[in-house]
Length: 151
Image (tube, rainbow, N blue to C red; front, side, top):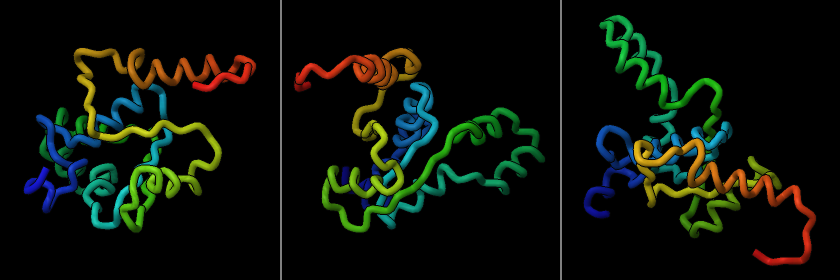
């Protein structure tokens, strides 16, 4: 994706009016995930900044009566969702990134999602399809006794 990603992390490249990472977070939220861990490199502060509350921006939009924009900015990370950042010091691959999140997630089940595939939230019901369906299937199969099958 060079040269575009020379100065901007690929996760922050815009697709229409949102960065790619926002589509991934929206899919997680629609699927019922309320704790999201983003594993990033220290050079990708723009990702953390994107999900952080911008009180100055919100106050300015409120003052200028830009209600729709204010709602869009506030919906980046709804109040019931926690987004945490974990730093991956060296880029040693996807498995290493997952291991970097281990101190935060422990032995709980996790979904590893990359912004390489973006799902159209208007063509797909993100609360029922894709990630949401995988979570339902996982929960259903988790309740069944293990019969020594490999998946």
